[in-house]
Image 1 (spheres, helix red, strand yellow):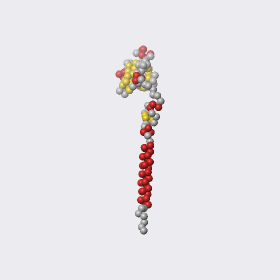
Image 2 (cartoon, rainbow, N blue to C red; image 1 turned 135 degrees about the vertical axis):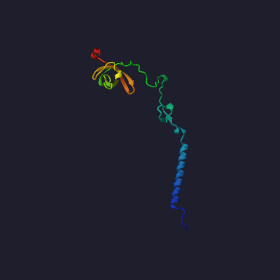
Image 3 (cartoon, rainbow, N blue to C red; image 1 turned 60 degrees about the vertical axis):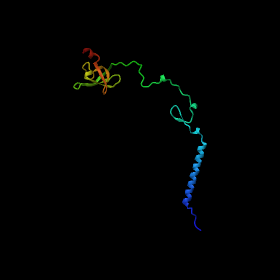
Image 4 (cartoon, helix red, strand yellow; image 1 turned 45 degrees about the horizontal axis):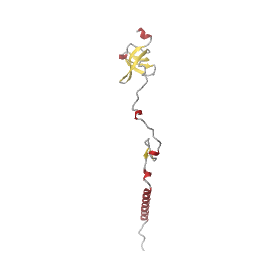
Length: 152
């Protein structure tokens, strides 16, 4: 008589096919058993996904619409004194500009010849006001402070 028509490869493919069919049946049964409640997810007040229903979560804090502020709140404090004091650290007379070191903040503030009320030199103590320019803060209305201003 002849040999069996089934080879080893055919048997293996048949086993894989049966195994796949059984796995598919198990998944189908698992889906039928699971309820809809297992698949529901909720979003809490912080945007996180959770399985706890909203009524079971902790109570929310009520916020009044009037309490919500959008943007920067206006400052209620008194504005600082617009007149500042400082020392001229650099001044180029030929080009007509210089820098003043602010005594309060320690910042270096640019000034131009057009912003001078009195002629100044390096290391002079001056008072000035500030103004926003194209490239930053500029000193305007620069004048000498102390005994030099009384003599002039």
